[in-house]
Length: 276
Image 1 (cartoon, helix red, strand yellow):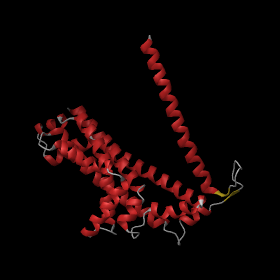
Image 2 (tube, helix red, strand yellow):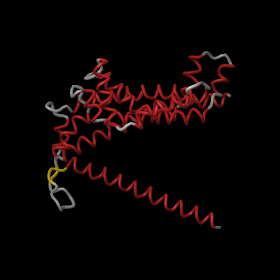
Image 3 (cartoon, helix red, strand yellow):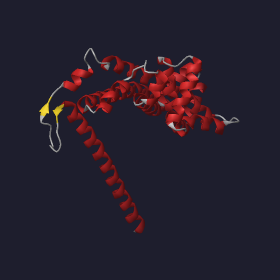
């Protein structure tokens, strides 16, 4: 009886915390959405006194970096998340499916970008990329973002690979499938949930990078975050909120694209399980 009461209290506390967190997120996004259409919202008025599309007009005007920076952010985010996910998946398979010396050191190395303070890491990457000729270039920014996203992708893929095991791969090889066929028809489809999570996390992390992009890109690689920051710092909430709403919509759209693509792969994984 005491255990049941304890579990009930824990569930109630968890539900309250989740509800509070959800309310904070919804209210924050709602206020940002309203601000993006507000032309005048003086304190202490509860509602805007004037409405306007000025924020969106400025974001997508010819004098703004809205469209070019948005397209560049999506491209960099997709590329860096793909690099981080592939590297994380390969590293997860090496850690979970094979025994070799230095495996613990390897896992620690993949987590170092997460453990090192972001400012220190960004400064070190900038110096290294200047010497390598990657500073102020799009490939350099993609690689820097991939390094930051790698710990998250690696942690996600290690859990997925450990839970999945190698039984489907072994069955496919015993039935005569080659390495390439096993990879694309069995391994990747069965890892679809983890790949979706790693890709989504990598994309969000990449798009939210400001300081790292500023240092590595040197101001030449202008992503959406760099184009938005002056309006946030300058106090023009209407334009900043418009940037934020567009940022959120694009992120959700890319997440949906990832989900649709990987859902097709998961169907192949289900077929493989049924066939087994």
